[in-house]
Image (cartoon, rainbow, N blue to C red):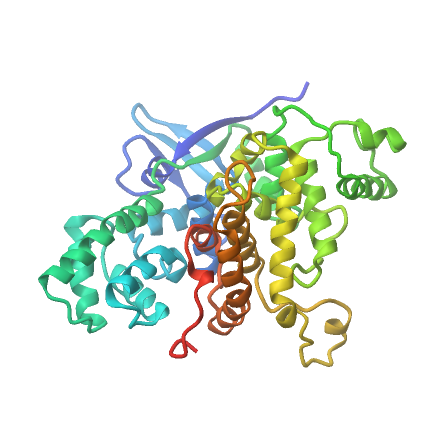
Length: 453
């Protein structure tokens, strides 16, 4: 009989950080000799913290319960050195430029400042100034200078706004909810990290560590969603094109020698019921097939894409940190009507950008001739789709009364924002928070000024 030497616990970030610091009085984590050195670069560290802020799965830490005293439990860290060290660094300096940059600044605050200043400042200049102020602080507490009044005073001098006391007061009021959001977004203390605690033979630890860190395929966050969404009721899909994509996935797996559970390759497959993961997988594949200039179709036919998940999430109006609740929100809509609305928004963006996304790039390299070239990011296009969707449709998917007016503005200005953002490299990084903030702003309705160009 196989013995289970591993138990599962859940520690929040504070508990974990305390355990790897010297002054811990409950749990103490020690680093073994066979642990590799710190190898994560700045980008990896930032992406890890961003994943936590967005509520994405970050994987479990593996500990070995080496010994216990009357007061303290001692653990050896088998796997998770990079993650635990990054958490410690962030907890000590969350405002450090390693973790905070322009991607953490929403469009809403820049828009608010421009309203007060009369659009006399460049958006990037404003954003850079705010980042410069925050990264110069020691934390997100008022005692460390993190206050709306301090920011107002700083920007008044930094941007040479020339505001009197009343003007600074106006800015201060605008910054209160913005700074609160920044502070809330930065607080990861209650985020729970899964902890696996191994209690087997200590001599097995180097072998376990080597196998954990050998090259292999890890679950994507979407595959984890597939497991988490199992409790949702299965449903029928009317769109046979979506079912075709799901069917193709299973056929490819069978060709590779796998057996797919409960798969019927006959025509009856089209009348069976599907999970939300299958639906999102299928619609993602269909989107990439129909709109090749918007989305690069680079993944294998049996591999899930982020596109279906991201497009549907933004059309539902959900923050990307709440993607795990996506099925619950989809339940509110008739899927056929919802699909038509989504494809309308994608088609609108595709038509608005056809003069730009159809450009052939000047490259003679063979790899560029074999596939469609995209110079934009996925999230840049997703933000435009979300903006069109929420501009046209209300919560019942009926057309809004001002759609005709807004649609003209979007048709005229989307292509300019597309090019401007590419030139400015505005969508570096994940872009999740920026994309979400854009759907409720009028940014894409406005022209890019001569001064901005």
